[in-house]
Length: 249
Image (cartoon, rainbow, N blue to C red):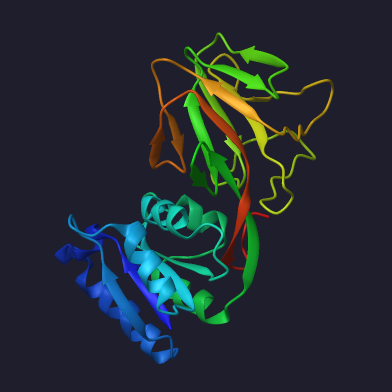
């Protein structure tokens, strides 16, 4: 059975026609299932956990990056696949990176059921699929507890698992959320961008990376705030995700 997790914002009247067309397409494709609507009184973690225990075969996040991020943190390590139906053009970078188009096209991708097992990043006890980001200001990066990096110029530090922003990475650097590697990517305002190379390597497969900053949080998948210090690594848990042909990896 498919279980559709509707984010609370899609309950706005302006989405009524769009939801109706999606639900019609889902019915035409034989993908009917249970609809769960998020609200102030519903805890998404317990909701997803309950549906998994009841035998859900697919959990589908209907919403945006924030919806997807919450669902990922509710089902990390589960063998049940995650599907995504992005609602609206804003804040749906994760779906785009996975090759999932908007609304009805996403229903067709859900039907095709192209399942790929993806790595997750972990920051303390929370997970991210795409990236963890924090401002350069006041940030120190400790790598494997052996040495540290502090970027003095303004900009942003990114730890990337899935490239969702089409970052201008150096040639031959390919972000792959299946390779078990997180890329440390540092952007500054002084130069367009640069990739931090450690001991001449273009990709640095660190075991543990710690972010320290007394004033600014780390943002996971443009959604969840994690206070520093935070230890970041590839999670032991993985996630099966339904992807499209146009994915970025």
